[in-house]
Length: 324
Image (cartoon, rainbow, N blue to C red):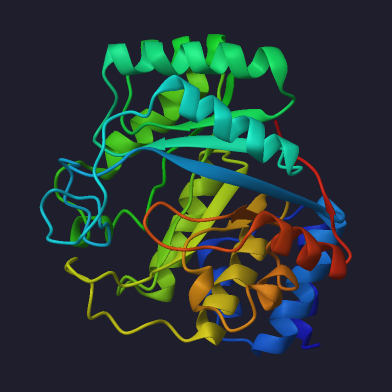
């Protein structure tokens, strides 16, 4: 292992946090050595716990926002199933099913800029009933909510709110113009103020630079976000990015390893795009990633919980919860 990688690895294990310039230096180091060192950092801070969550597409399509990668945007022509907030029985039934498979986290994800008060009330009712009967932890991805709405969700039993930063502040206007980076920051701040933990990451392969990815990781570290989903762009027909060339897998693995160097003690979660990876994400789980969204994504296919549990156990992990 090279002197530079070894030096930074040892400093990080002793409590040092990389700055932006140092992270960009590491981005140019040999990939295999970077993967190995990132895995050692992961073991040092997080052990062999692997955090699996599943999501339900609780409300689909007709989103007012114009995110270029998203099939659910009303601004694009992608074919996607459209429906309002699912009935309570359906959301609870899926929670029961996932808990029975050994899943410890369950996230209700809704399309749209935000939820109405009536929708928040319905989700709170769901949460109370789920928490009364199941040990599963509940997360909500409801967009740019108000702090009072976050507080109601927290009181009802949700422990974590999701709101991706998506990319760096510099690059964000290239992929969305209907809301701002500062609005996302404010949503994260309000969720934390309401007593919720936050899950926030982004998508790589949008056309951003490695510096943009480093800046996103630095932003997330500054916000003290513990769960960090990393999506690999899956270009969807009918979206503005449908012809975007798919990112080489080596480049994605390098990004995961860099995230571990920048975010040494966080849950780095593979999310969308795993179906594009030749090994189901195996290399990433040996290069710093220690969490995943399992099952189908919102508009693309994923891997089954059973398949993922078998994979992580074959790599020496045990399923559990990282953070609250």
